[in-house]
Amino acid sequence: MPRALVTGAAQGLGSEIARRLGALGYEVVVHGRDAARTEVALAAAPGAVAGVTGRLDSLASTRLLADDARGRGPYDVIVHNAALGPDQDRPILTEDGLERIVQVNVVAPYLLCALLSMPRRMVIIGSDSAAQGEPRVDLSPPDPWNGRQAYANSKLLATMLAFELAARHTDRPVNVVHPGWLRTRMGGPQAALPISDGADTPVWMLTSDEAVPRRGGQYVHKRHAEPAPPAAHDLALRAALVERLAQVSGEHLH
Image (tube, rainbow, N blue to C red; front, top):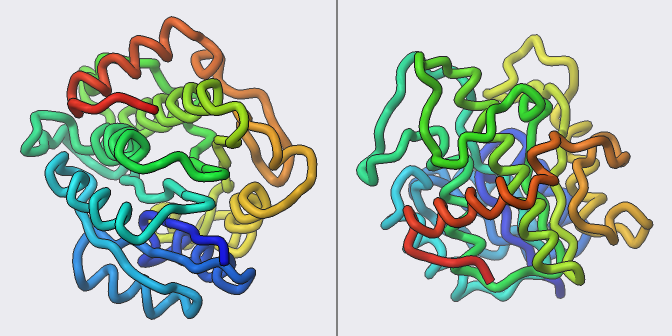
């Protein structure tokens, strides 16, 4: 049976993606940031075969997570869903000296990609806020601080990372999916879409044999490829980002 890894699977979009993959016959490995969240993720996804635990705001913890996940792989599909939102009223430095939003949303998925084998397909969950992002490839926070700008920047950098991975692995589609404004903990109750709508395209991208899911290096919304932010196509900016991520993590991409 095919095997999937879904990060941030204890609630919201990640939980729904894990549940749907399980219903399609995937052996799903779910991730939570601590033991309690991992148990919640397992309970929410009946098809889950295992759970892995790790904080993404710590390089050491992310490494342990990767070690655990590697032992439960290899994976046919991986979904990088875990992320922090924009509601942070000041910059918070992690134990690694990085601003927390950029570490969780960009550095952690990079490190997991460097430490795990490339799956057959990968989806990084994006956001339309990337269009307002600044390509701060040095990973510096906005100055003055603005939580929404920090989030937008991180989603732009994550999109650039996905497009770099897609360029390196043309036979293994890597794509960004913007799921829309969802009624999740991050999106809030006033959001336009139910979680079920947001999960549809990521799961389709991972499992369908239609033309769009078979290609990599796309920014996808509602099963359609849309124009990506220009920085996603900038080879020099992408190279600078990957160089900086390798520097802070100590690991290089495949």
